[in-house]
Image (tube, rainbow, N blue to C red; front, side):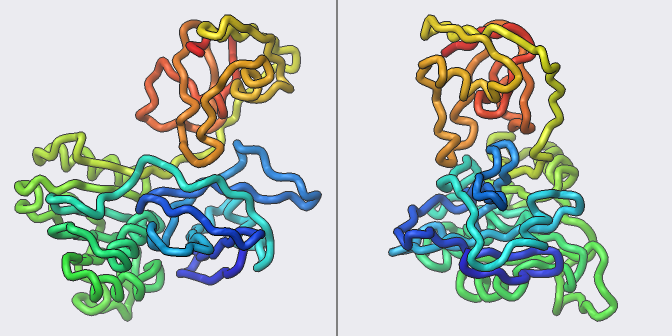
Length: 338
């Protein structure tokens, strides 16, 4: 880590550069990095203990030498607490390549509406940094950004700078609990939470694409309200914050047969064998594993028979018949379509 600053109370901005000084790949605006910390003995955390954070800088940069992240401190969160209380410049973190399917268009004929709450601004910050740095062909970009007040308004100054540089961009700030020194029209534009009533009907008529990132209750309310106003579900996209870790109780004597139907192989799984991905690889099965380089959920496969439990909450878009082999354990004898 090469830099560590306070973006706002409870949010730290990080700059991360490769230890060997090598070049880094670009990414799509809105994508994220999966981060693992290094333990005191030099070992690396287990993948299930890692966290994913949206990249905050321009997605395209010639001769890129570092990445930017912003991490909010979650009370009781082991990883964010470590970043806020223990991490120092020069410490090492282990990263997957940028990945994720929440990517925003820099070239489109449709208006783009961004609906953000709190730290949910980060993927949109990357998007706006990309537009400012490289241009684009977006007819209109509207950002509705909800925070408590000016004292808790991440990247406020930077967003205003970007609005001045991007002619197509309009930023509308919402304060749920304005401070005594906050002035309507100067510090913020609207009082209260971001709601669908704040969105001009012309944007819906012109088939704007809607991108949402923030707390789950906000996403649920806005998604339902947009659909009720006639926005097709497939034109509403969201990046969601979920508890990363699940408690899965496995008896010490657990033993299940896992069959890989296409490969004609099988293996006996025991508690110390870890996730299904490792079991399959040890059995000589060609296992999809792009998740290791940031291609989240690329290890998904269909369960033909039996049950498994995820260690990390999967996307709601994952079919009920599928399992993520990098983050799941069998809970019965299991047949996979691999």
